[in-house]
Image (cartoon, rainbow over all chains, first blue to last red; front, side):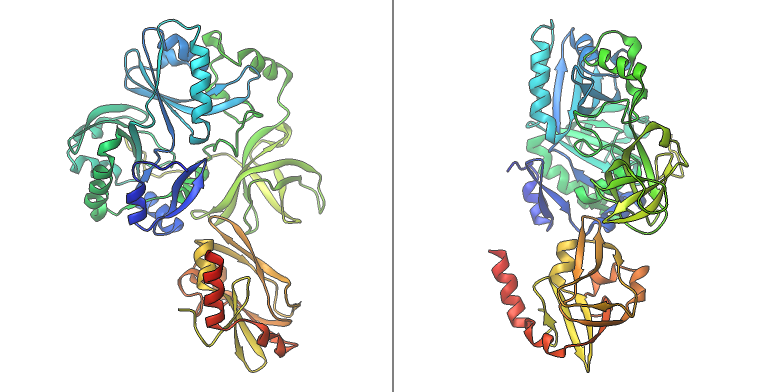
Length: 370
Length: 128
């Protein structure tokens, strides 16, 4: 099994480790709910180095990325980033990605751990006919940490990265963290104010330990994948493999806002246009249960009828929201039943539990920092 | 480490006898394996249950796990505090985290359950 450069640190912290996409990763340290609360109220530090980091550079990088991702890369100014997807010719989602643009002709594509090799191979294949593009997998040489929570900014400022104070959402900063050159981006998967840190793998153990030590007074805790999944679900952020796969498209998953049809040719465009013209047969929605119960991946969505409504879809992610103390989830339903307020039921082991479609996210942060 | 005054079942429930009544909970091993418990679904008092039958569901942040009863009888009480504070099962599985009290129809069933030392040995054998 793969291990990140911080494996020894996780073990020393007493983390519970699980196999995640072939990686031995911490699912929890102090406890999922405790770690969740740390991120919502103070700060949490995640090792997300299992994800893939692929550098795309060169004078042809922009036009190459325009062709292999669905969002409009031309609108991405240096030091900005955006959410995007890599589709196949059928419009199926090969991966959902974050694309950073640290400087002209230099892009960093952050991909899911489960898709790392697939996407790297796909990019290399697509680039074979593209001029002036260099693709380098930097997943091993760089680690990726996420520092998330309302206290994350002040922690970085106290560590001497004063410039973070002026970094806008999704923007990046090439700076120095505790003497180590780092790409610091205001991105994350939690819905809180937060940053992701990309830095050299050989320096990572020291940075991890110092960050935790110096952030402790502000409530900083190490956070595992268990809390990460709850945090992202409350934001209705998609999880590849659960909510989206190669059998679903950006339009079905409600991500039509990232598909830049007008930008010109890109892989999957014809298929997606044709799907748009034909009309969708299903759409991903966010829902809440109206009685206390916990929906899980794979449960059936039923038409709202008395008992025994017909199956209209499937739950792709679900859990009990610590914030709402309700069962929440994501799932696919026919478009006619996808509007917020629509009634349905979730089959919880044979018992139909009433549910309602809601407008995502489930969690709305009170203060919106600048 | 597991209390010696209790009896244990392979599905990691424990039983404490008081006359004909048995208090049921889950073991420290079970709560640790489940992780943070967020919701417990239980039958109503008065429900008749049979040894080996599923009694309810324990939902944690990670998974759903079935709760079994190793004894037969009638449920006389459930721990109402768990409705708002299911996490007590994590913090005090042998005390305030008790789950239900069952009036036994066949008290001899308890003798078939493991003692604490047998359960410790059972857990050790499971680890291999």
